[in-house]
Length: 140
Image (cartoon, rainbow, N blue to C red; front, side):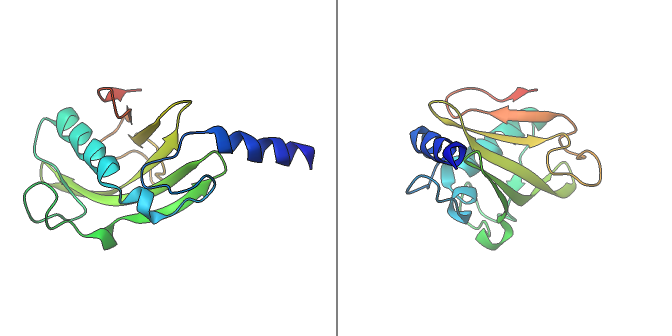
């Protein structure tokens, strides 16, 4: 019981994720947050060096993307959410899993590699990618 209280109080000190309104309350709004999607799209375009469409977007920048294509898949007890979205680039369309999680003072997004893939690696992103909102994408 004491361990559960320590874990619970530790999560209150973690920074909030984008669109998270209160500690320990995680929902699909985090997956659909504009900052998260912008980080994901920017990193994907930089890594692939081509235009990338996420969430079946049909318009320029953020117009026309389909919120119903962005799903909350799971919630971690470590203040992180597992989300999925359809991404298209270079004639390939696939559904990827991405993780939005807290760091000691901010948040990050991870995708690619074997992140959430039950069928092996991803075609577009065979290696894992980590994005921090103030940094540049890095393959890890």
